[in-house]
Image 1 (tube, rainbow, N blue to C red):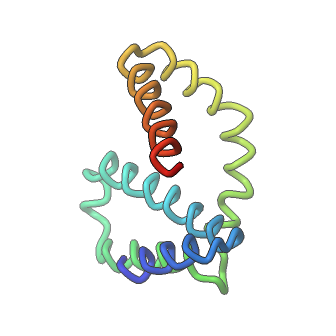
Image 2 (image 1 turned 180 degrees about the vertical axis):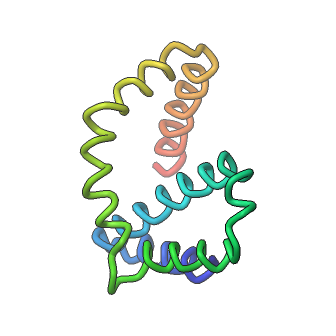
Length: 117
């Protein structure tokens, strides 16, 4: 996992937009995969050599040769954008704690700009 983190940091530092997009796709898919793995743990327990299968899937997702992550995001991205994103935004907007956290985030952003000036 550390080579992936290092690659993500290098691409961000070099402001490589295409590389950042690839890394962001990878991290989003990794998070979804991890959550699904937790939810499906009772089923996954019975899959022999699961850790090797998981490693192969992660390699397929991140490899520049296969660009599996880009293939999945090309299909799932527009689906998420059209059907899920607005619902999640509305749900987050209804929770008072998130509204306060977002307000604090905006204040921190303004404060960081003032500090840098």
